[in-house]
Every structure is written in structure tokens, then in C-alpha cells.
Amino acid sequence: MSNLEVMKDAAVAAGKFMRGAGNQTEHTQKSNAKDFVTVADIKSQDLIRKQLNEAFANTVVLSEEDSEEERKQLYAPNFTGFILDPIDGTYNFKRGMQESAISIGYIENGESVAGVVYDPYKDELYEAELGKGALMNGQPIHVSGQSDLEGAAVAFSNSYDDKAMARTLKRHVAIYEQSGVMPWTSCPGSGILIMAWVACGRIDAYHHNGIKPWDNAAAFIIAKEAGATILDLQGNDAKFTTSTLNIGTPAIVNKLQQIFSSLPAELLS
Image (cartoon, rainbow, N blue to C red):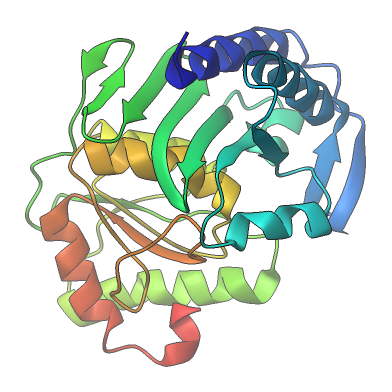
């Protein structure tokens, strides 16, 4: 069985658990009251890790919920292994919003080469392998053909860091101030789902600061294979370890980047 098939099976199994785990929201606070890990996060992580370890006994499997010391491996230039986010959108999960996802990415020598994102509430399974295109529930997907900011759907997402969230809001308002157009704005609580929606054309672009490798590991390869442009907020090509992001259909990303390039550096971090 290929890496991708095992990843898909593990994500769907974790999703089945997640759908029935709405009462397992007891949590431990991490950085602040908005940043926490639930019992369900850990159980989902353990379920996925068990399946990956059984299939690939000698391959590293790292999770968002691992220690900071363990996660340092992700930043090594030659890192190879699986990276998982057992429940992205934990705040949404705890509140019963049904807007969360499971992500499993496979990194080879520092590059994302395969990824799976599963939305168990919509039963949508996104997948991609390098050079093979992106699929949702087995059907090819592609970013939108939107070329104008007017009529575009542009998302950002919440941050556990109050100051970082304020910078995001100012950056988004700058789109209107600089262009005279305020795009249709979304702020869901799962960056991974937003990137999956970029890949299938539901959202045209997404900008964020404070993105993490476990958010990007699967979503980047899915979006890239669906035709997305993926930059950091300074306009450089983004890697899965990049912490700022401007991702979406190429024309909209380029228009946003022109605006962002005129902003104070503090709004791009």
C-alpha cells in the first residue's frame, strides 16, 4: 500500500472517531485561553500515529501535539517523515461548530510530496501527490479562475496571538484602502480547511501570519497541485516551514502581493 493510501485510511478513521467525539472536549490550555488541546486531539493523534507506524515502522511521525523539542526536527533541511494535525480547528471543535479537519502530510528531504486533508463533517477527502494533480473525493480539483478583486473571496484566519490577529485585520483592511475594493471576507477557524477550499475554488486567496508546518504539510501540496500560487507575505516562494502566507489563484495572489508590498514590515510578520 502506498504512502497516500495509508494516509487516506488513517485520516478517514480519525474522522470517524472525531464525528463521534463531540463530548470529548475536556482540554488543557497551551499558550493562552484560546489555544488548547482536547482529549479528542490526543486520541485522534494516537489513532493516526498507530496506523502510520504499523505501515512505516522506520519513518518519523510528528504531530502538532508533540513537544517543541521533538518538532524542531521539522526545520532540518533534509527532514523526511509524516507530519500530522489530528484536529485543526480545535476551537471550532470544542464549540461544536463542525468546521475542523484532519491533516497528514508526507515530507521528503524538506519538501512536501504527498498530503491528505479530511473534513469529516462534509465527508470530503482532499489528496495530492507531487506531479499528479489534486483530488477531492476522487475527482480532480483546481483553484478558481477569479482574476479581479471585485467579486473575489479572500480569507484570513484567527490567531492565538492577539497582536498577530490585529496585524492581520489591519492588513486585510489595507486591501480596501489600497484598491477601493473589499473582497468577500471569510474568517473560518481552520487554516487547513481554508487552503483546501482554495484548492477546490471555493475561496480565491488566503493570507495569514503565524502559520505552522503542521498546517502546511498537506495543504500546500494539495493547493499547489490544484494550481495555487503559494508565497510568504514578503512575496517569496513559501516552504512548508514558512510562517506567513499568501496563497490562492495566481491572479488574486499577485494583486494582494502588490498591496502587501506597500505595507509596513510589521504587518507582514
